[in-house]
Length: 506
DNA sequence: CGAGTTTGACCTGCGC
DNA sequence: GCGCAGGTCAAACTCG
Ligand SMILES: [Zn+2]
Image 1 (cartoon, rainbow, N blue to C red):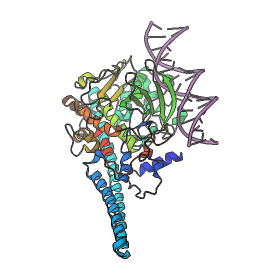
Image 2: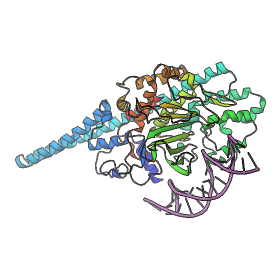
Image 3: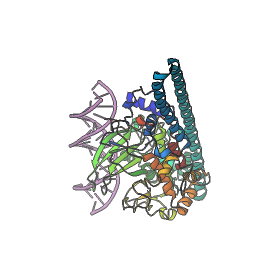
Image 4: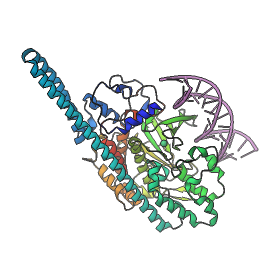
């Protein structure tokens, strides 16, 4: 609890200036410095953590070398170091040759410089912080626009068609509070759709969240988020047999998942959330057990994830997320969630549901994505969007995902420069264009479709965004490997690249 | 002592 | 109806 609070605080101040004084026992939280544990227990989706620390030590950060901010930081730090070293030399000389008054003079000047250094860092941190806040607001506004536009269009085209699955519904990176703000159009739309069917639906029409059937889990989410409800134990689902049609249309919505495949020796990926393991199972056809986690960042958060190693390549970690958080997410987690949501949007934005299950026009919509395939309801009752981060730009993707999932082959290290500051000088399809695509309030469906169809590099841009998050395996900071302590090592220095992720992916 | 993990039991859906 | 597999529960256990 206390630890969590500390993480949270640290996270919240991630944009602030790192405490300059080296006396702070920060090593407890980020021991990335001296002792690197041989065993990586958790893969870090947010390599930025190290940046702050590296900044502390004046080390260069390759990814950010081109960034004005980071270069500022770097020079900042370096200046400090130079001053320190030179000043010490000066003082040594002064000890021998100059009067002590001059020494104190130099020291005062040095202190002044340090003070200024500190102040600049603070300023930079604050700027970054507000920048990120603005970014978040922009993102929400954009998504709201896109959502509204999409539902509107679908309404016009389909009339009384079954509910459209939207990304924020099936995996929303935002807290449900934020979702509520943006949701009305979607939920209203949904309600209208359902209301259009015969009156027997009235009972279940009211709201999707009101599938809170009294049962084992009902109490957990009572009073908490309702719109964020995205997964429901099948037992609860089963209780509602009053309307089969409705149930069918609900299934894909509830069960939609986003799966991330990434190479990692670590048993966990750090995605900014805290997870508690609640089960482990040996899945058939895979010698590696599958672990089940649920989000513990807030009481009753319905988000779960499954972690499993790939049977073919055990260095590949498959993390499958399911559900919506009902609490504020750290930007770190939001970045990942946003990115996955973006991929999900690509797949799902054109999807419709039928009584046979979900049918995804993937082939038609994603001609350039050989791994986007039609959902086979018999194979999996829910759509799975797979972000494959294991493949290099030229790698031949192996036949991993079953034909029931859509895969976006994403290179992890394809564009390390994007990791840094893709928005400034991106190669090929830039994150900027990706961002513009997402920002365009026209039709997200068409935008995304067009982008993918016309430029296969779109997925690379997405990959770049994610790879920014994934980055290098995290240095484990001690025992606690159960909860993802990515937050604990969040950067104390600006996180522009991370913010870019959020931006470009949505 | 509390929080998190482990692990066997249990529940449910689905195919035969 | 039966068996299998995925998913979840919860008591026991571990750890800090
Ligand atoms: Zn959560």
